Length: 89
Image (cartoon, rainbow, N blue to C red; front, side, top):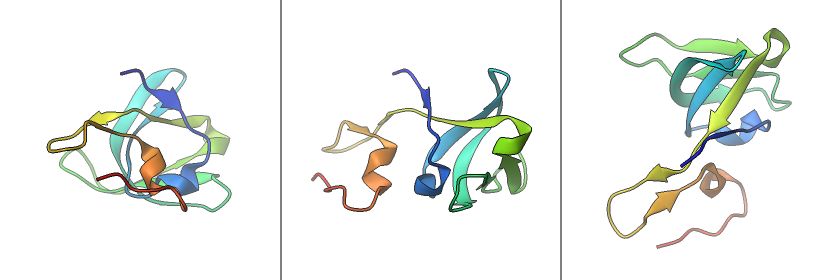
């Protein structure tokens, strides 16, 4: 599945993403926190690096993509984290 840029970073807490700059992936990881106005996003620390801050003012973009899941659900998009979105299964 194709990934695409998503501008409402504050809605992506807990979602796996790619951070890109100038069309190149800088880092992949799970969003740990984000500013309410989507001006900055923090990726949680993992095996490849510590917690990291990326800002829109510096030209970073956050990209999301559907993920294949085990079990009764086939795919999950970041939309399941949005307030008011019904849960499946």
